[in-house]
Image (tube, rainbow, N blue to C red; front, side):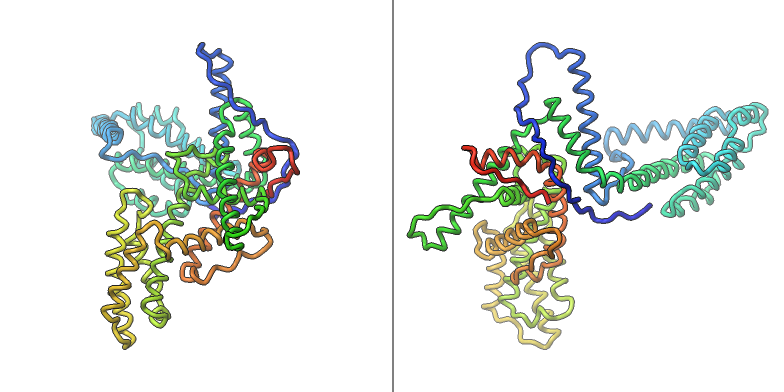
Length: 492
């Protein structure tokens, strides 16, 4: 299967047409007519297709996986019982004298159908051979006369699977060749064929991905408009999200101007640009709480990705803060030891894993982290022949690391502010321009920060390109409520 590349949003001009921003009508009390139910079914199909196409385009690691219920679940236990009963029945039939091939023939028919589904148009010779060897009419006749050679057919099937499977399945094929029990062999053949079917589906997805990339923007926009037209979604939550971002951007801008003027002279706030509001809106999603405010409809398909990035951001802020405190208290010499910073990062990540969860004991984790980092610093100093840390430095280091648990800790706030500024600068930079320089306070986490920023920008750019025409009228209404000058949203 071909490898995927990182998805970058295409540069498309926003069309001039404006979307329908009407709020969906409230449901009526009478039963829905048949045409309405048909529209609902079509809308569900549209939503499913839209989500699937979006996942394929945006998620470079997207693939289908076989659904395997947990063994200790009710579904898992029922599945295990049913499968065991079936294969026990197959074994019992083949143990009779003469053997009963009823179940075996049905399995051979299913195997033939699966192998045929894996053939490509150019496999004409292999298709003809498959029809000849697995001729079900002939197989039934041979079974009726006691002349069915099941081991020969199984060997042919395994050989055919070996010629069709992806290289990753070669170990599975070797295990099949070593299998001597006919029933176990048939069971394993069916299992490996299931894996091969999934491989083919994922290969097809990868083959279609370049074509989807070319049409993704127009396709997603059209499908979303269908959902709007069918009243399956609205833009109410999106409007509230952008309004919150405008308030946040205006507050930050006013505070900045007031600080520059010493807070003594009245000033007129500079207007906030639509692009700046939208960038800040995307940044808000990294710390969004869907329990307190519904997620915007236009970014709903990326909610899981944004939440994952938000969790990484939360950990990165703590990691950078811990590294900065440790470096300040222990001196830069020990940080120049090859591999030292990497070892510290591994320790920090291990002890702070899950810090985004509400049940996480952040204070306790940071206390343990301070103890562990002190030991690592002492070991590094000892290996260099340096002077051990004084008791005062040790106490100060552990105290400052533990103090990072406070919401308004100055070091943590500084790091969070620097990372926010960097991410907003990355979103605001033209696509042709190199990423902004990582601030000095974040240099020790620069690789992680740049990776996070790249993933964040990729999601944002694609979303902004698709939904730019929907954001423009909302931002225009919020920024210029009295019909002032109109400004568009930058869709790059």
